[in-house]
Amino acid sequence: MKQSEVSRRSFLKNAAVLSTLTGAFPAILTARTGASKPAGVKQASANEKINLACVGCGNQGAHDIKQFAATGLINVVALCDVDLGAPHTTEIMEKFPAAKHFKDFREMFDKMSREIDAVSIGIPDFAHFAVTMEAIRLGKHVFVEKPLARTFYQNELLMQAAAKYKVVTQMGNQGHSGANYFQFKAWVDAGIIKDVTAISAHMNSSRRWHGWDPKITHFPAGEPLPATLDWDAWLNIAQYHDYNHDYHNGQWRCWFDFGLGALGDWGCHILDTAHQFLELGLPTEINPLKLDGQNDYFFPMASTLLFKFPARKKMPAVDVTWYDGVNNLPPIPAGYGIQGLDPNIPAPSSGEIKASLNPGKIIYSKQLTFKGGSHGSTLSIIPEEKAKAMASKLPEVPESPSNHYKNFLLACKGLEKTRSPFEVAAPLSQVMNLGVIAQMIHEKLVFDREKKIITNNAFANALLVGPPPRKGWEQYYNY
Image 1 (cartoon, rainbow, N blue to C red):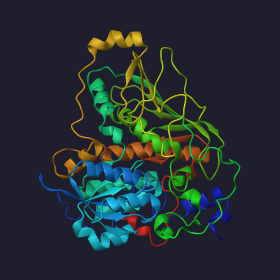
Image 2 (cartoon, helix red, strand yellow):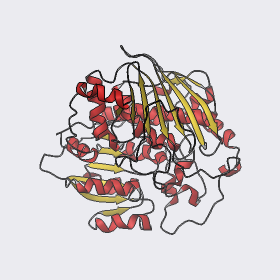
Image 3 (spheres, rainbow, N blue to C red):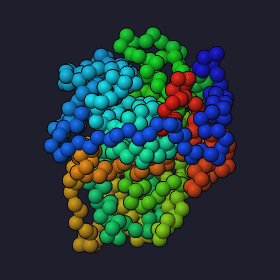
């Protein structure tokens, strides 16, 4: 029986419970280490260009490759894309004619591993894990688009593997090298941002699945494959699905099986600085307050999720509330003012931002309230009268010494440290993983931060691992 003919919830429940990768819970963090030893990691010299292999050559992957090339610090030695030769990949193929071409990352590493210093990975969320793990095991430095991985457990394994193999890592939440990163850090260090008790984070632009029928009870029917597409390589570790155009070229983001919805897409850009500099870590509760159009297959039309983070050190507990959906706006505090379109916030992959409120956050502390956007967009104190009164007390904010791409490459040379390494990026991505589980099961989750397990729902706890990989892809869970 094909997966599309099986009850979605039945499939997930059976696949999660029967997973052989982790054994019985709560042993989710048992290291799945194999017999391999860390490979030698090459550090480029200060004057040497880095040989970069690029996995994902269209859409966001293409953008990343162009940004890396603009630094002048790389040689693009390999281009890998499951749809290489399709219209969305030809620009990159023509731009780097000397690079060798592959459709399967496994073949690329088999044939070119010795020629590769670092890897850029800009492919669908569900496929990040296997490519990243293979690169790490081979001792290659890795730049991986956000969110880092599709499941909580995958993030945990990548964090452990990166520490074991001592490679340079960076997640592609590009604003983490922008103005907001340095401002947020400076304001925390100076005591301007302190005693934060609540954050409203919001992304209210239309998403790709808006307009779909939320009552759907099956996956879309199979369609003829495009001539350029290697569908088996595209599926990667995911369970089998027949090809349909509504999985490909960004449409994968709509489905629980492949993406992490609006939360995974934008949460790592909006909440990154608060998560790091307020040392939020992992939540103790995730409560889906609102899920409009909840469906077992694709993401809700609108979500409101409450994440409860406990007190940390001398910092009070924080409630982070996430809002997505076109009309699902957070409460707007008095004195908020008008938030114009910020050029530091890029448009969604599905088109320009069309929302009454920019993607961003409102941060409430015991003394001050801040509003901010996404990516590198900076914070401001509201209302305006309070901002003017505080102006003389604000510290000088240093400029970024390098952008996110250059930061990664300089770290490969030992000249900088990456700003979003896996030890920072994986826990942030795990917050998104937990939110998506709450969206999937439509129930409150109680989470043990020490054991890293969900304590009130065995099904949800199994989803920390998720369905097992397709046969023949199990090896990536060993490092």
